[in-house]
Image (cartoon, rainbow, N blue to C red):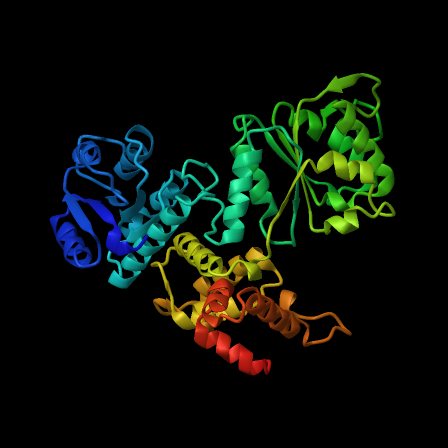
Length: 450
């Protein structure tokens, strides 16, 4: 849906702000309503459905909460049940509250004074998100993982849809994906959307457990079971009782320990080291690995019966290089986050910066993007982040000895060829799918002599 079709409600007790926003938005949107008194929000929402709401964080009202914006945001979302995308308006000193508003369901926040183009861009992004949520596969806006998981690309919308389908069940989930793609966030989202959301979420990095600690950590032990066992201790299975147990990097468990894990999963009971008493456990199991499923199916490394046990439903998280325009969306999210953390005014990401991000293959995925943006925010000297401000980690870009240094170039070349073929030679559609401009795509075609 275009911004031209948007109905906008602006609530701020500063008349100058209301006037400025009305003058800016009047030629850009379908309709705009301004309001000084937040007590009138319900009246406006009862008369009309709004697509976008700009809401101030602080009002001189009778509500003595110290964070009136959060109060009215909750009213809009929960009591008034508006489906509008809410953008918070905040002064520089209230950024911590603005960050909190994102967790309460706000789409974004703007710091006074803002750049007009940045405000318009934020409103367009909000309308794009709202349009995608109204599609046949939608992220409804009611899911509690929205502020944690970001993505407007088709591949991420498919994942959001799958989370919403499987989360209310107790099916075992296997999450596949490269390091740094956000597998733990997916696991937490499944827990948050499940019927166990108010119960424990227990994470175990099983790949980091030594063989001597494996049983003690997972199943617990009795006092005196081994030299350092000075008291009884519950294992992670018991800690996760009635909740969700997340076993990360499950592909790294040695074969002989896999049999012990399989026995517990089949019987749903654990026996602590040094004890003969079987303790029933009620858990929802979510596992993750960076190993491809074909490798897990190799019985020389992983028991096939354990694969079937943990893999009722699988979710494959795409690498960042396959997520197109999500790179810019995530980059701006991290810019806001780290500007708030390091007490800096919110920086702008210019076109050269965004193009550099989209052209980079991100072998370290979202985690690498996050660190690159944090460095850029710390080192930034002006109000804008451009290509020269963005440096990528030598940890990820350094190739091992003997590796062909054209590997990443071949990866990009093959990706371009595959996407162009997918769209039957349509350069515009291919560029849009790749998340770059037509001009940038033509440059790469020339670069690889395609």
